[in-house]
Image 1 (cartoon, rainbow, N blue to C red):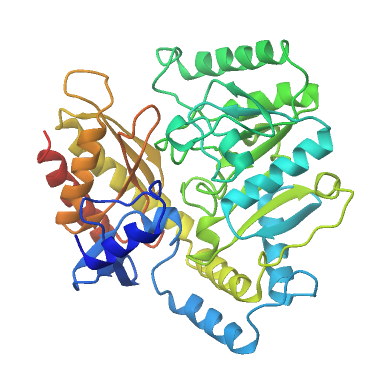
Image 2 (image 1 turned 90 degrees about the horizontal axis):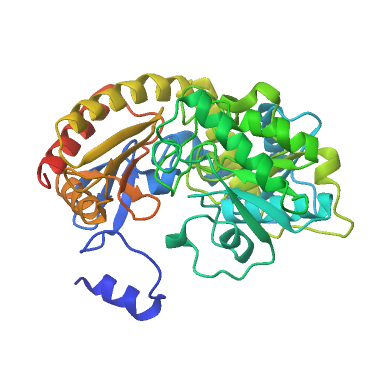
Length: 427
């Protein structure tokens, strides 16, 4: 055990998770690579949990941060803040929400917490619909709506949460149905649920479930849900903390795969927009955002430095068409990984889109989750020079692959090769 690991254990809570039997200290990064304290280089296929969106040490972002820090680091939202207004204008336009207002936070957890405050206040209801297998953050309210018991340490909550079918396509009671039939029965389940309860404030849903193992419903499910929700006056909150900014390749936002009946009422974002800086936020149409009848501020949300980083990062992403790169390189990577998975006895499914890919592992010859294999592959991939993540529903048995969106084709090929070796080591 390293001395830093010992010091970490002495001052950190026991529930603060660390990857690897011998935890890794990352000292610096560049592009799609990071280095540890021993000088070893790794290809990064997890980006600090989908957060290093463009590249490590991206010159445009580091320059913007440095220049802004040299002027002023902090002021709070009590004062006009030019970078915050400029980024809010761009996000409002990109969101697709009409007459949009934007509120910046410091994390996705805080963004979802704010969205829940807005929805419950606007609708005068403390009931919330959420998806099974979901994850929405670490705060008291966000944990209370999380549908994944591995990440929900308490059942106490300020909200009454009702869980809806549909977030997981290839497991559960409806997995045998066609996509159209799957959507039909999930909508029927929602209709039935609403017939047995007081009217909820909102449905909150990740278009692709992140911590849940990159699972998703068929395209159009949330559009079908929207028809039902609108009849009952229930808001739709799209949690885009992991799916936003073009990561899925096909769409800029995950909700756009379900956009037949318009954009969500509320959209939350975080992670990739700051490329590692602490930015989260909420977008909502004006009447929803303005429903609070008391004062509020954010001390750190929308800080000049993080906003400068967000502006530079978003500009780089759009100017270099990283969404298109995610579609092209991600398509190649998922093809390679499906070929690898076809030759492995422990791979149940390779799924995802763009540069958001999950590999679900099971015990050979069964449908039983295999968290031990997931941990072993994580270790073997590290030994091979590749960093990946893991997640999943009832058990943590899904490998999560989400590199920076500037990933090159040679890097995708290299990562697939290392993963193939790592999977062979546990077969």
